Image 1 (cartoon, rainbow, N blue to C red):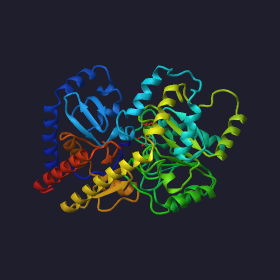
Image 2 (image 1 turned 30 degrees about the vertical axis):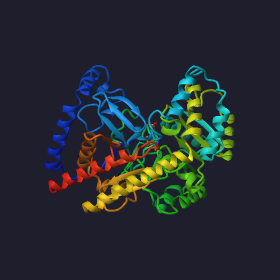
Image 3 (image 1 turned 60 degrees about the vertical axis):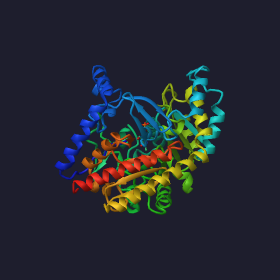
Image 4 (image 1 turned 90 degrees about the vertical axis):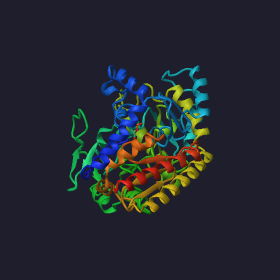
Length: 460
Ligand SMILES: Cc1ncc(COP(=O)(O)O)c(C=O)c1O
């Protein structure tokens, strides 16, 4: 998730009128949601249990009665094909049967006791089998996992600086909430609330797919780690150029910088994530969200060599709080569900189904774009794809910013929502789960064609 800041074209009056019409349609058809919103307004900041839930284009919240497979049913009994899938948390579908069953059964065996559950050894083995790294630690969210890994890398390298890519999002992690200006200067992100320290001094930011910039940022040997997604997924979708990562990793190794791959979203690429598919073995790997089928749980893995450095750092420090870990991390319930998720969802057959659904959706969207003659692109990575209002796939976040059209994007989201299709807010990402049906994909395609026709009729 990332509310990505960009330069916007002037608002278009025709789009605004169309948007107003779609808002009216939403309001007229979601009366129960409207009533719940009024009730929630009295108890929740911005009327939502978590304030970003307000950041959708619809005039008030869309309250969900049930989420099952790749389908959402709202309290007004409208049914939606869900291509957002909880921004990847529900990548394997909502409440997958095998996991729901283990969840129920395990709930009677104990929820948390700050001791390892019996299944811990087996789950550790599954993590290594699925993701390829031998050693693991747990957290409750990907944000937490990233925060903990950043502490570890500083502790084991004795270096303070970290490096991220322009356009990145790694969760609520202070060190990463900085922006790179066109001049190259790094500044604290304006939107961040309550920041105490300036992270612009300790975080370096370089454009993605730029090896020269990467080398320049690493060459003084002060950077503890590069924290990166293998492909940027939070400012649209930006793919790595061929061999980029092999060379980028070689640079990290040359300058003693650890590589942290955050595969929280790119785990949708293939079984075990992008890095496993491409044979890039990072020093640390972070996976959250879908790792335990959307239950609060995240993991970070590391090599044996890194583990040895972590042991030394811990042994050499004073006894007491490490600042790493939380009481509920690795709790009994999360471990049981993680185990079920790894053995029953992170499987070749899940990914085959995801890829084949994604083939169908990508080819349909590409045909529609071609037929419409619009200079738009579909960028795809495994089961994830992004509609981009630009003629070619972007090379970095700067390209994405230059082509951003938020008015059009918001209209597309609401238009789809009003016709039973949910896509990820903030950008135009669509994700396919193993249980997304062909009928749902065809429905999205026909709504997209309707949208293109609407644009043509307005001479837009
Ligand atoms: C790549 C990446 N890492 C980490 C996170 C943080 O995940 P969470 O909000 O579950 O902590 C996100 C959230 O969107 C993400 O996209």
